[in-house]
Length: 128
Image: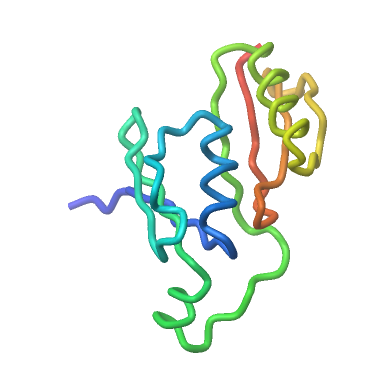
């Protein structure tokens, strides 16, 4: 019996702001759920993502504290190096914070990093 990863949960201060960011990344997220405490989707490649409000997390885990630092990042695969650049530009022009502009990484990928509204590091990459 194997235990396999199935879903990544994102804790969001403001679910609506977070959903707007991930929609801009290209995720197909239904509208009308921006004020819900929990939103879940399944991506086209079968991976589940959920957005969880801070209030919900505090109800589930009474001793939950806002984390400090970055312990995990989400990486979004782009089809081409040019798509890394255009996605990065679209996000930063919409006001999202850049951590690292697109560059050709030594491991053979075009790579960039931006922060989502909750300061989670979001990597964009494509094979060179």
